[in-house]
Amino acid sequence: MTTINHFANSLHVPAIYEDNAIQLEGYNLERLFKETKKGIFDTLLLDRLIMQQIDVLDKSTKQNLKAFAKKEWKIKTFGFRASGRYVWFTEENACNSINQTYSFEKIAFKFDAETINAKKWSLVRASLIAKQPKRALYINALEANARQQGDDPNKWWVTKTPVSLDNALGNPLTQSQLLQAA
Image 1 (cartoon, helix red, strand yellow):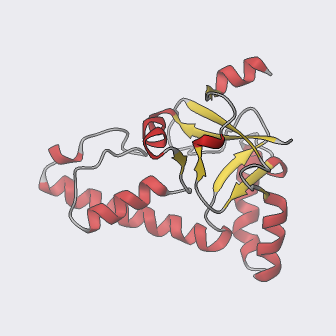
Image 2 (cartoon, rainbow, N blue to C red):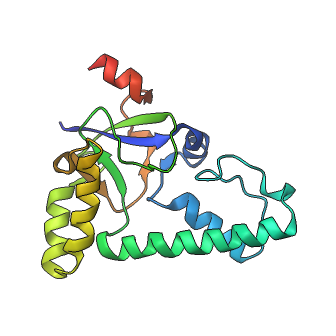
């Protein structure tokens, strides 16, 4: 059994429990983009704007938020086209390369790789580059950045679908607790 960890921002944990699943990368930003595009501003921002109620924002802030969501989603989808869109995991007890924009407490959800049908990133990577060699430039930059932060892409795993919490091994731990237990 290969045990792997998914690290999430602690502010996202209530939404993860509400969905009873770890959603695909970019899920919160996608929701924000789609809702602001429709003119809906009553969502809790769970990523860069950290838990601000949108419905109290004035009109110009809403317009700025709409532009922000559109721009960020465009950047994210560029990455998705290059490397794919996944739920990411690592065999390591720490993850330093997720969202370097701001600091936050990371919560680790443990899973058995086989139970959730996770695939080794190195195999997925090889397949992506074999199909379209241009992807290597983006993927190599992604991995170089991770290594620079102290993470090992050779220990990464991915799934192409959301992962049910019903498959989690035990209760989630903070990254600090996980490192202390190791």
